[in-house]
Image (cartoon, rainbow, N blue to C red; front, side, top):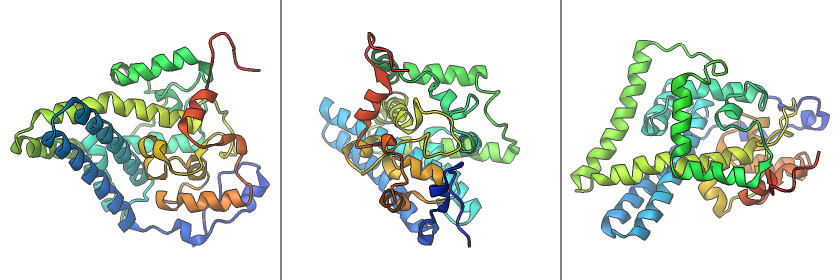
Length: 321
């Protein structure tokens, strides 16, 4: 099977590059182990919070659970690209039930918007740019801090929910035709996943942990982590046919990527160039591209703090033209 071409525009060097064929090979057991690890980490956080009730324990558990919720969203992302399991129906079913459903998300709706994002990232009708409000970067550092604090305190979540309810994104989000059965399945997946979670916590005498350590992080810490991740990926970069120019990558896993870039999503240039490469091969793809100096050095970072610094500026010092 021939390998997909890079989304490289007129970058002839990138067009001539051919990744190793094995980087496109799906290994479903790795994806399923990653999904299992996410849920085991969630379970461990709940157990620690129940076993050692203390504000510090609750805070650490909330951080781990929010990070794992972001990791589930990344698994949903893999499933939306058809990279989780080989059989499409099984890929979509597992992605909805065990990744999207627990977060009250529809993978089919997400897939439609996300694939549009991949076709022409950072244009005015890019769903990712609109939803995360990335059209005005770089911006003053104080304004960025207010946005991050709004996410942390749940304000950003409710503002976004209101915008979706009002239909603010209707013009840019692709219409998804769903059968009544598909809609029912999505709702059932949300209710089933969250019902099982609440039921298990209740059975062990800790029902309030569902509210305090599942729902609360999902509307506070998760949006914060999601925004930081999204800013790293594209904020302040131009629309460009060569998609190595309008994305960033964190060049190696570290403590920051554990929280903000799970499952290799921090190799974002590589993902945009070759969307058919599953997450567990992105590091090798990065190494192959880097060895040939095919990645723009200005878009490579060691961590998220450097990105936040570069997409903002002190109030009295506007960005250079």
